[in-house]
Image 1: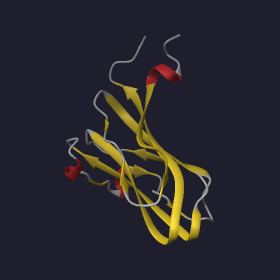
Image 2: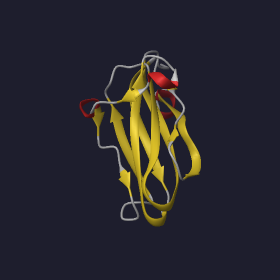
Image 3: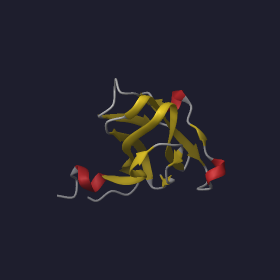
Image 4: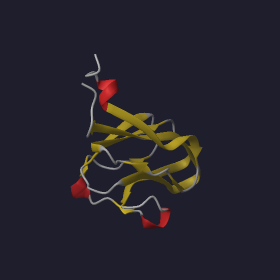
Length: 133
C-alpha cells in the first residue's frame, strides 16, 4: 500500500557523515510541497580534550547561504544539542514548525583541544501536499 510511512516522508541529507572538527554549514533542504519537517542529528563519539559542539537549525526563504538565520526557539520542538563527551554517541530529534521554504543544520566546535565529532544530520520532510493514495 502507498499509505505506509516510506511514501509519506522524504529524508534529505543536510550534514553529510563526517568527522567534524570546525564550523560547517549543511546543505539547504527544500521544504516546498511538505507541511512538516524534523531534523535528526546522529552523533558519534566525541574526541579531544574537553570537546564541545553546538548544532543550530537555520531557515531561509532562499537557498542562498548568506540568507540563512537561526530558527526561533518557538518554531522548534526540542532543543538544539550541545554535544560533549557526557552526551555523545546519541541521536537527537528536533521538530521544525517554521514557515520558511529552506532549512539546514550547522555545527560548530565550541571548545576543546583538537575536538572531533563524527556526525551527520538528516531532515525528514513529512506530510506531503500531494501524497500517494
